[in-house]
Image (cartoon, rainbow, N blue to C red):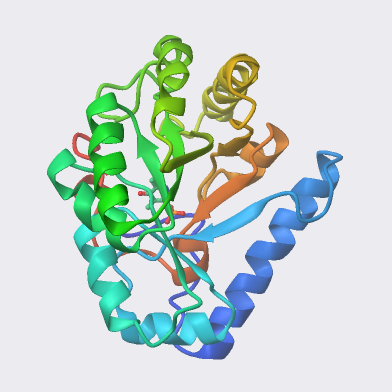
Amino acid sequence: MSEHPSAAAHAQTQADFAANLASVRERIARAEASAGRAPGSVRLLPVTKTVPSERLRLAIAAGVDWLGENKVQEALQKSEELADLPQLKYSVIGHLQTNKSKYVARFAHEFQALDNLRQAEALQRRLELEDRTLDVFVQVNTSGEESKFGMPPEAAPGFVKQLPAFDRLHVKGLMTLAIFSTDQVAVRRCFQKLRAVRDTVREADERIAELSMGMSGDFELAIAEGATVVRVGQGIFGARALPDSHYWPGFAG
Ligand SMILES: *Cc1c(COP(=O)(O)O)cnc(C)c1O
């Protein structure tokens, strides 16, 4: 996947990053307006996977304050290399092996891919040891593709009922990856499904309000369907060198 239709030109300077960020923010503002939503109701989570720390410093100088990372080791390494910038917040947005929970508990502010109880238990235990808390999103597989992590939509209500037992996890909302398709109707159906699941689970747990959905190629659609967080990588940083199959096993990108 070397050419991505929504990728920005490869940013090299702080001014390039500022221009790309401004353009993504403007697209978000337009999508908020055309959906009749309040300005600023959507948070931009820049996805910084594969971008080395030295290039990230330019993006940070241009206004990036959250780093969304798919792999915990890569995130941990950046949190060490960028330790002189304590204002940065780290969001782990990819599948986490239970035995790596200790790393997330140590430095992350947010984890968006919670999809099983063993994970919740491991995070709770590690967060107690670190005396920290973590914002979490429950990942739901709205596309039905086997390659995707996340729980089936019908499992979400039963799952979220168990989460109040884990007091170190501050449950914020739900996250999904839409189907990889140029069929906008199919993509939109995934976002609609996540919103419907959110409406159901919010009756059981009013903390579950947020919807993390939408990436460089589809975030306007996601905002139209109620996204409160969009995760944008290539739209800010340019096309990634690594194929997406490196991050999403089974996806032949
Ligand atoms: C890489 C990634 C994104 C961002 O994708 P872009 O096409 O770069 O915008 C969003 N969410 C997850 C879970 C990712 O791994």
